[in-house]
Length: 33
Image (cartoon, rainbow, N blue to C red; front, side):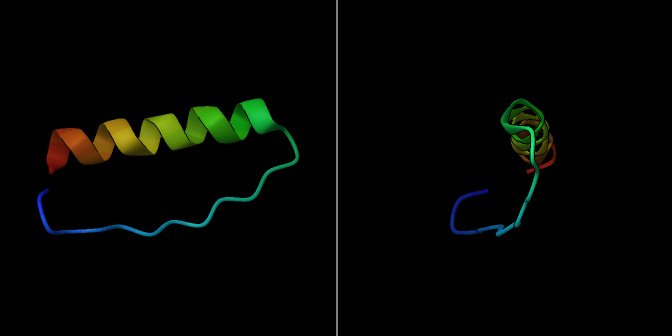
């Protein structure tokens, strides 16, 4: 995924949920990248 970027905006009241969602997105992007 060199040279490509993804910008995703996430909003959540629960910071743990936000961290988990962000981690899932990053892992998926790395796998499919």
